Image (cartoon, rainbow, N blue to C red; front, side, top):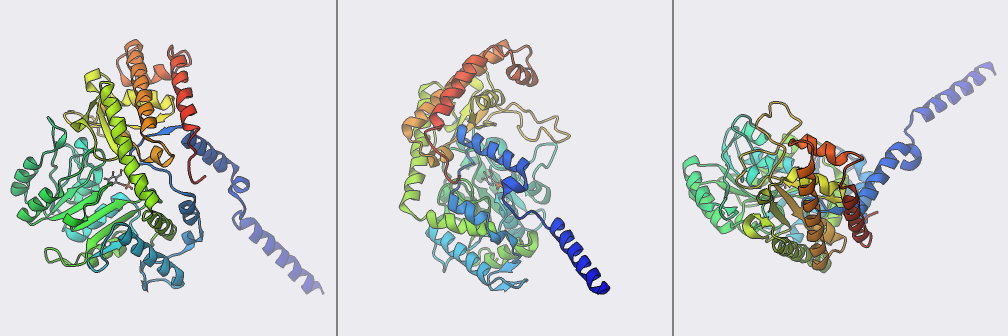
Length: 477
Ligand code: PLP
């Protein structure tokens, strides 16, 4: 009897310890009110603000459901049908469905093209391709970051190899022709003949034009290089060996990456084997199955007529924005845009992107400062050490249309957007001229101070921005 009661007691204790040590399996609001409140605030911010960051978008409720599902629990190293873990019956079906939809969404023949949907994001996808195709210290050429290229395309400064790509490979940038704002293909060709890269990268983060793929293919063939496209928007498959992409920008999916590759060998390399091995076991472990599930959902939607209409609206909206900004007297890099973004050169106004970004932020307009061709200074990495070279005040701003187009903005709304930005730039000019000192910090402290004399005008701009956005709900929440 005594033994039995001890057993009951121990059992009760172990159950209560078990209960106390298990995580709180109830709603976020109840389990972690602090985090819940922060997410709610971010939701309100996203809803209130005019979201013009060219690399952002709003994904759908269905994608978010998949991303927040039980798929996050599963390990599945390897590829469908060849896993290092059990229990992958449904995960295999999910990844295969995602691959099939990816090829279909981009109109690719399954006999000729394959895709790896496991990259964790755009930068890892790029590094995985370099790992697959190159030996350490092989040579690459990508668009220089201050001219619109991405860090992962090999950015380095005269003093520092900034990107991992430039640490492990030898990087020679190509650039824009500063007089036109278009890629200088003649310079690319001349440099490629001398440098003899093994890989040429097309694609950019802040270039408002399409690339000349036939010309780049010719250059790559002439020097025996692979041609890779890090695709932001357009369809480059006809001319490329490998195409990488993020999935959370104009595709409107979850945060992730994909690598498309030709199935036939290129320059003697079996791209399929090399790329799949570079992703796993080369650089990643278990795939993020919840992301792959969400990606499959968005790729299904990407094949719908509504999505095609959305994409062409993104471009029309960008043209309307570019037109109105030009009418208002702004200088746009390359004089306009063929895609989803414009790059505004603010230097003729003797103002910079950092100050304009700050004032617009205070007026609920979210965009980013950006370097423009011809600047002698670099924007990147104020928070890192050894950055005497790097300035914080680039001469331009980048403005993108994908996110607000998702919320339903049309051309006339982007005319209003251009006018709101113009009001913000006027306020920035006034604030700069009355700031107590010339430094960026003087300006930032001045505009944040409670007695900032332009507070009333700034509040009026903010109210009109928020009145506009309030008519366009964000999807997914
Ligand atoms: N490639 C291009 C052209 C990009 O614009 C970006 C991000 O903006 C990336 C790669 C990197 O993507 P992620 O931030 O997902 O690594």
